[in-house]
Image (tube, rainbow, N blue to C red; front, side):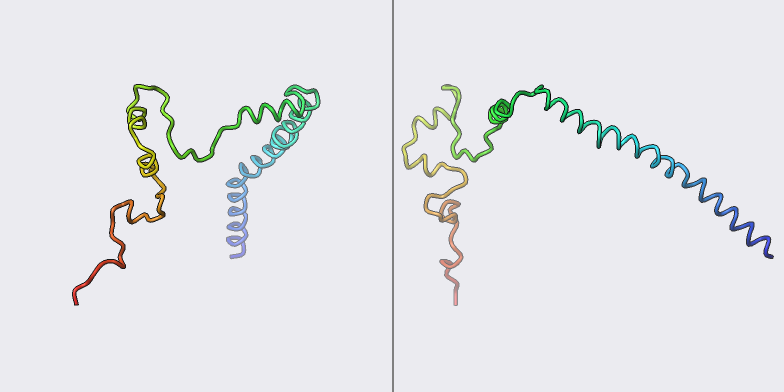
Length: 128
């Protein structure tokens, strides 16, 4: 009876070691590759290039960053590029008040019900 228990434990341990061996060796082999390539080498390469001035001085880098920066701000009104566009023709004929009311998201009065031509719920009369 003792033989069967020890044999079972031995076979189970061998099977578990064989099952997990690739995970163990994969981690052992991946750690130095990560350490020497991504964590250490690339950081040193960037610092080395930066110290040699491959990307220019600090002022040149700031100027390039400002030049590359996009305008992500909110632009309230579309500016047509071509004179033959439908928007350009529409904007030429609009009055100032129509321009204000043509804004797609904002209401000049702050009353979104009036802009959507909906009645306010407090103004609804119910039959009693």
